[in-house]
Length: 421
Image 1 (spheres, rainbow, N blue to C red):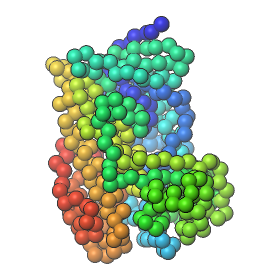
Image 2 (cartoon, helix red, strand yellow; image 1 turned 45 degrees about the vertical axis):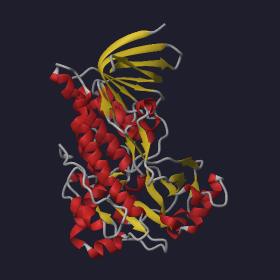
Image 3 (cartoon, helix red, strand yellow; image 1 turned 30 degrees about the vertical axis):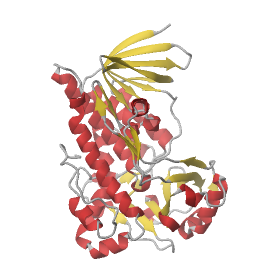
């Protein structure tokens, strides 16, 4: 027997994008439901925060949680060559004179649960174990969703707007045929967790390290709470699978061949199975339509070399919620595709800028050290890109990056409608 409920907005998915959207809408005084298929806490990859997430956390009222959860503080990003030589770390506080210059590394099971609990505390109806199966439409306009509960009961949620924050399940983009894979970014990742592995001293203890391997692949090394590190290798499938397909054997081979990673893992013990994920980069051809929009990974995901995933999830959840609120406030005509025009423009601007940086990273001739040596005046702009200040105009940075990367586009997206802060 089905039940029906009425909301201003229904959010599909309770991950960072969905929880943020639900919180912001509740703060606007909207009646909002956040529908999450899984029961939290649950595992998820993507543990490193960019500094500019601080502004969303401030708005959500959750900054105090990071100290309480004993999250390692992240002051910088550092890069390691294939010879094991470590770059001068990119310390955020050298160019950012603001509390956001200190960010964190998080255990996602705890972090995601905190955000969802916060949405509930701020007034959103949070329902877990509820799997959304269908978008309800009337005359081509989204008017709600149909979902199944864990026990098998069907429920209908009527709403003036729907935000799809279903993550890499891409609920609506897949159903609508909007999902487009990035042909230039086709890496896969093989990753796991160690306890007792080395951490660098002092300010670098919580740094994100990117260690290069041949063929422009790389390792991430992210210190987490409880003396655990997240470590994974990212490269083309043909490279990683060149002589076998066993993830454990491939990870062990690549870790042994990477001087810095081998040294840092040597005192540690692997405490999780080795996982594999692929198809990193994609984008939907549109961000919304009449009565609905996409947020977070439901709209786009970009290769994770600069830890952009959580930043884009949080920021898009915030921006989508604000757009829905403005559409509802306008009254006449309700929430339409035009409601999301500024949101889409800003998201594409940010993603296009991040993507240019990622393409430069993967170009065989590119080197951060050589780039900064040639353009010391652009060091602050490069740090802007690494911290998430991509709603500003980084055109001068990318004009210079063309000298190092023939794949970096010379064209600039449209000027964004709003700043990051």
